Length: 301
Length: 301
Image 1 (cartoon, rainbow over the protein chains, first blue to last red):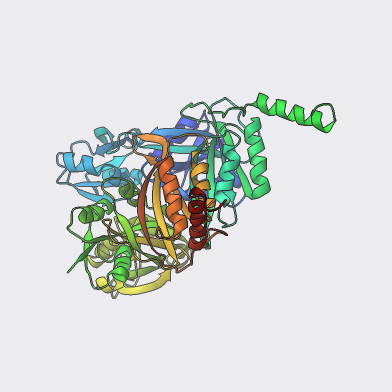
Image 2 (tube, rainbow over the protein chains, first blue to last red; image 1 turned 30 degrees about the vertical axis):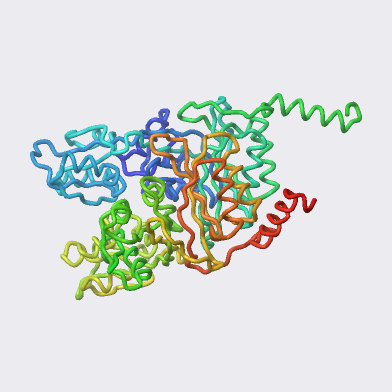
C-alpha cells in the first residue's frame, strides 16, 4: 500500500488535510516539513502532505524553500481547510486555569480566550497536538487544537469552531516526484518558482509575459535566496493547466528569460474555474500557429 | 521624554532593534505588534518598533496587516539585525536536559542543538525572553535567546552567535504618525501598500509603472485582504525617496490606477544606494517637464 508522509504529529490540521486527500493510502506522520519532502525524494513515501499558505499567517516558508531546492517535487492535489479550532479539556475539569497551544494557534484565538476564559493563562506548545498530549497528562487544563484532535485524544470538547478571524483558511499540497500530471479540469492551478537577476523591471517583465497571454495570477511570494538577503525567488500561482496552450507558451517565455522550476498543475480545491483572457484560448493559439505556419510556407500573408 | 513602544517582552531581538534606534528615548515593551501600533495611534507613544521581515521566516504578517489597516503610520527608520542566538543557562548547570525557546527560534538552531546538545529535549515558549525567565525560575535548563537577554537576566552564556543559517537577518521598522519625512540620503527605501481589483494583469501593470520610471523593487509581499481569501494587497518596497521625481511620479501613476497608502521613505539600514534607471534622474524629469511646458505654450515642438 502506498504511503503519504505528512507534517505531524497526528491530530493536527495537516493530518486532517492528508486524511481528506488520502484515498485509502497509509498516513505516516513525520517531524518536519523538510522531512516530509525528503521521504518522497528518498522513495520512503509516494506522497507528502504539507501546508503552503495560511490566510492569517502568510506563506509557509519551509514549504516554499523546500520546493525550490533539492530535487524537484510537484503538487498533484491540494486541500483547503477552514482554520476553526476546537478547545479540549480532560473530562471532569471544572475550572480552566491554563490553556496550551502552538503560539500561532493562540494568536488566532486571542479574542475568544479573552471573552470565554479570561482568567486562564496561555502556555506555548510545540504543536496543537502536543498541547492536547500535555492536557491528557494533566500538565495543563485545556488545549486549542485542530478538530481532528478530538478523535485522537480522550478529551472532552469544550468549544468548537473557535476562530477570531472567521474565514481564516490554510491550503495544503500533496507532493509527488515528477510524473504523469493530473488531467486538466478547467479549474486548475499551476505553480512555478522563477529566479531572476536583481535588475530594475525584472519582475514586471515576468508578470507581463503572463498578463499578455491572458493568464490570471492568484498568488505571488518573494523569498530571499539563502545566503543572498535582498535577492529573491518568486513563487507564482496562476490559473490554468500546463497542458493548455497559453500556460505552456508563457512557461516557455519565462524559461527564455530566467531560471524556472515547474511545481505542478492540479485541480483547485475551491473549484474556481480559470479566467482566460480574450484571444488566449487553446483555439486562439492553434489558429494563430496555423497562420504563422502558412505565412512561413508562403501560403498566406 | 518621548517614548518608543516596542513588541516585547524585554530581552528580545525587537528590544535590541529598538535600543539601536532609541536615540535617548524611553523604551516601553508592549504585548503584541498591534498594541505597539495602537500606542502610537493613540498618542501614548511617539514611535513604535516592530519586526517587518525575516530572511528565514518571511514577512511578519501582523506588521503588514497593521500598516494597511486603521489610521496611517509611516516608517521613519529601520534596523537590520543578524539573527544570531545566545544560549543561556543558570550558573552551575552541568547537564542541559531541556532547552526552551519560541518555536521559530528553535527551528533556526535545530542543527546546532543536534550537534551540541543532542540529549536535550526542546520545549516551546511564548518568546525567547519567556524562555529565559523560565530558566531563571528553574523550570528548564537552557534558553535560546536574543543576545540582549544576556544582560537582562542573571544567566550564564553557554554559547553565542548560534544560527543554522549564518546570514539570517530580521528587519525592524520605527513607526510614527505621518508628519515631516526623513530627508533623502540617496540610500533610501520607500514603502507602499497597493490594493487592486483581482483582474488579469493588474499587478504587471503596477510593476510596469515602477519599471518604466527606472525604479528598482526590493520587496513584494502579497497579503490576502481579510474576509476575501484570494484577494490580495501588495506591499511594495522600492529604492528611492518620495521627494525624488521618479518616485513621486510613480506614486501618482499608481494612485490613478488603484488604492495606495504611503508607508514611509527612510534611509536603508544597509546603506545601499538606490539604482536609478537611465533617464530617470531628477534632472531628466525636470528637463522633460520644462519641454512639455514649452510645447504647451507654443514655444517649442
